Image (tube, rainbow, N blue to C red; front, side):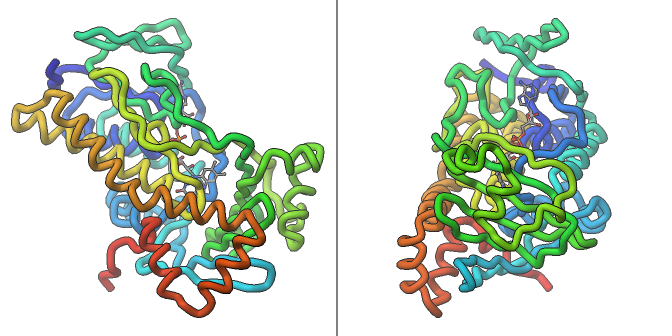
Length: 368
Ligand SMILES: Cc1cc2nc3c(=O)[nH]c(=O)nc-3n(C[C@H](O)[C@H](O)[C@H](O)COP(=O)(O)OP(=O)(O)OC[C@H]3O[C@@H](n4cnc5c(N)ncnc54)[C@H](O)[C@@H]3O)c2cc1C
């Protein structure tokens, strides 16, 4: 099976993964259609911190002045907190804090400008696969034939291999606040970790990963839950409602058919503890797009070639990031483990620096 530029590529989902793939493909003249079920701008449970590892790509997709114009702010420090103790994890180059409502909206606008056809709101209900094509079934009754389906829906549920695994017994909650937070802070709590990030202009985000048992114990009252975990939290800071979702956590899941490929969270999801998810989503979409364009330019557009290269590179990126984020999440939600970690690390910033680098936060060296 060969893919060529005349074949339509359907992308399911217009998050960071779907949009970056669409930008790379449509800019090179490929016929791309994105189906997105939500109306943008929309809020999304997310800490909205984007790792330094993704800074270069993010600023290529959306130049710095525009990131600031849509409400983003550079983040230059990352603090881990336990009670009144803090540890500084170095950010070798600057990272970004960008509200997802604005980030995803802007990326989709750029995908459209690059030539992608966007159908929104429009949910994909199912995909049928054959050797010669894939048939995408959409909520309005339409069926769209294409040469390749890119699963960027955050789960991969329409790929033959099915959805990625979720972290059992965990949920993520998030709200925006009228409150200035400095940099990125992650607080260790029993059975939870609380992240805050500031955007400037007296605005910030609180995102919490928490065992669902905590939610039951507070009868679903998320303000009360947030106060238990972080006594300084004042519900009057809140701007809008809390949003919640399950937390995906999975190793790399390869595509289940030659006419199917998974990117972003639909391919693999690391624990949301340090801004790697959006970066991996942006990178995987951009990398896939460039891989297809380059492979076909040298007449080697058999999926065996680019799908294998894509899988190899994705796995390589996860090799350190995945266990580093897993370990941090496990340590921060267990007070005894956190205490042991704190006394072990003490002033030895080399250990924090090693974790920071393993989890992807070293990023490129600053150029200025
Ligand atoms: C509580 C929490 C906090 C987090 N904090 C951070 C953080 O601070 N930094 C970070 O980098 N990552 C964070 N993450 C992870 C991050 O949100 C994800 O890694 C990232 O959103 C993945 O991007 P994606 O494009 O793969 O998928 P998504 O962002 O999930 O986008 C998928 C899109 O597909 C659409 N869609 C789904 N199904 C369909 C369908 N059937 N038809 C059409 N459209 C569909 C959805 O509406 C959505 O717009 C956090 C996650 C959680 C849960």
